[in-house]
Length: 98
Image: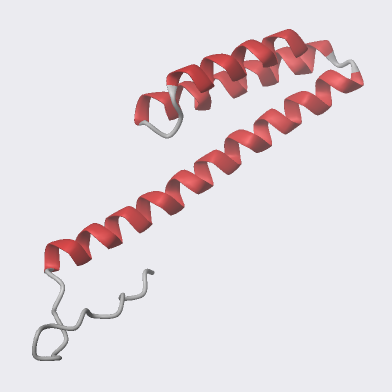
C-alpha cells in the first residue's frame, strides 16, 4: 500500500521512529482514498451513461438511469465523499437533461 516515508534525522543524526498510530493513520487514509476514488469513478460512469442516453433521445432509459444516478450521489453525500451542494447541483443539472 503506502510506502514508508523517510525517517527524520534527530539531534545526534540518528533516524527518528514514527509512532505506530501515525503509521496506522497513513494506512487508513490510503485505504479510504482508494475506496473514495473507486466510488467516484462509478458515479461518473453512471453520469456519463445517463448523458449518452439523453443525447440519443432515449427518454425512458434516461429516466431510469437518472434514478440510478441519484442513489450513489445521495450515498456519497451521506458518507462524506461529496459535499451536499455538489450533489444537489449535479442532480439538478442531470434532471434537466433527462
